Image (tube, rainbow, N blue to C red; front, side):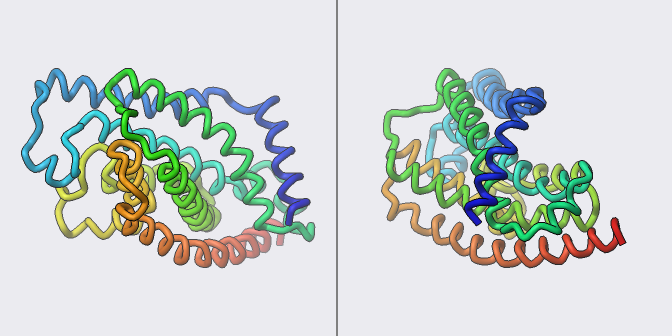
Length: 269
């Protein structure tokens, strides 16, 4: 597995240096910046600095700007990571290298972890840039629980990795990336408490947010990063994330295996 991991990591690192479309990198940063700027302008020039009384009740904070900016930060991070991992196999298909990949005795776990690790280098840069920009528009850093934040982000990344495997399986089934991934991203932006608490939405669709790692990741991140809460305080969110990992990972692994055989037989058979 580690040999495959190392080879995939190095290959993708070289690709990023020599052929990576920097417009994607800038575009992902701008998504977070746009959400941040929209929240700032809306709060000051539309809401005139006032909030609905229900907001603090639902969000457990009266800091609207920090709430929205942290949501935009995690949303941008989630979209980038999901794209990196889920598009791996279908990119091999489009580039004509899928048959060679499937015929080798390489570890699929090492392959995906190589994609994740190399992509994390770029994601970290995007994350830091949006974080710094958010600081200029109202994101607070005074009560950060550093250890808690790192633990939450680690569990969150693993849960996104598991979700990305499922997304990748659907991409292979539909032979499509654009509609599949963008439909998911649109739903995530609506029901995962990115810019407003999910309680504002009808009760009938709350369950959609509950099966998304982004919902529980943003809830936990806000508490440890903005409020300085302890890990025990966000225990429920962490349990949800671990539960989603336990569900998504085996489903995603099985889906990818079946879809790889299906695509190989259909495309090359």
